[in-house]
Length: 242
Image 1 (cartoon, one colour):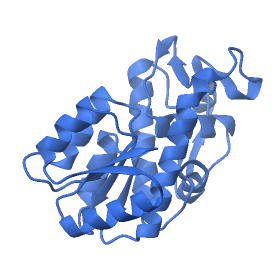
Image 2: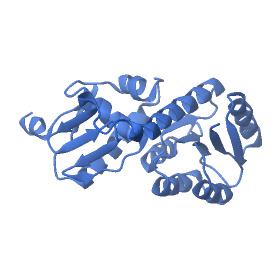
Image 3: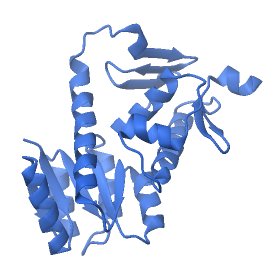
Image 4: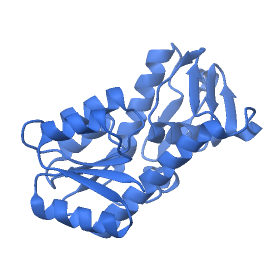
């Protein structure tokens, strides 16, 4: 049974979330206090966090940042206010996997939770795959290695630490080397849904990927922006010759 932490100081919202998560046979633990949630999330096992930003004693952005430092694979779905665009962007930059804007549809929330848990479970099972994965699951482009079997990324033989969602996005783009994808197409393919207004999810994950790859190597960006359309993956030689 998956264990979900609900970090939300609005009692009515927390109760609604707990009811619907339990209806999906998930175990839930509720925290209304940010500091209490922070301590528990770092010391206990949870499979996913529903994380509000505005909390007493410790805000959700600080909690998100600390979780990512100590538990990079723990899925985080942030809950933000309608006018909190800056908070949404910061949350994604700090490592949140996804966000929902209040007021939100509970059906959409349940769907997002299921999608995040599915991808996490696939990531956790990946090391059990045979030592030599199929050719199409192991991409070696220039000095970048992406191994879907072990979920390992290396650039110039240096490991690149990615969240599960960052890995999925990079691997999908690299698999379709040279093809341009819109943000909506990437949401469909990698997140499993597409909704107007959620383009920040793609933009922020792309920026995080670029920054992590730049820190690991001195090559041009593998992920190129096609203005007015979306993004595509190119090798450094292709970037320089473009």
